[in-house]
Length: 241
Image (tube, rainbow, N blue to C red; front, side, top):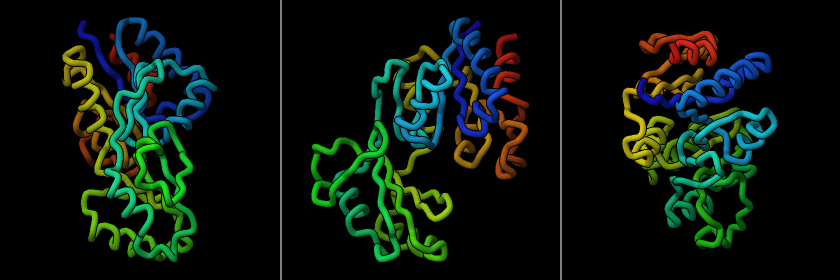
C-alpha cells in the first residue's frame, strides 16, 4: 500500500472536543506507525499550535502555520516561511491607510508573535515576518480599511475575525501542501494526499486535494462537492482499510 499523507485542520476538526481529540490522537499514532505521514494545517502561529501539541501529546510529522505560510518538521526545523518583502512590510506596517482607526498592530514571525519597533521594520535583524494583525477600533471601518490597502498592494490577502484584519501575501493551505510535496521529492504522490477541515480557510486544500469536511463544518463548505466524515478518527480508519 502506498504511503499516505493526511493533512488536518486543528480547531474544530482535529480538536472538536476533548473526547474526540484523544480518539484522534490514538488513530494518528496507528496511522503513523503504519508508515504514513500526518500534518496539522492551522491558521494559528507556530508558538500557539506548538503549545497545543505539547499539552495534548499530539504526534505529527509536519506543522503548517499561519494558513500555510510557514512549515515546520517534527523536530521544530523551519522548512520555509512565506515572508513579506521588506519594502512591503514597511509600507503596510508603518503607513497603513486609515491608521487613525487602528488600535494595535501585531506582527507574526515564523515562530509566532514578535515585538517590532517601527524604526526596525525594514531591518533584517527582526527575522521573517509572515503575517500582520491589525486591530481596528470600529467594525464599520473594516471594509474601507481593506479596500484602501488593496488598491496599492493587490498581492496581499485579508481575513477578518471580529475587529481584527489579518494581512499576508497570497497563500493558502493548498499552496503549503504543494511546497511540502516538492520538499518530499516524490516520497508522497499527489493522489495519496488526504485533507480534512471544517471552515473557509480549509476550502482550497479540500478542493485541490482529496478533501473531507467534518460533519459539523461551517455552511460555507457545503454545496462544494466535498465529501463528509464524522470525525478525523473515522476518516483514518477508512484510510487504513
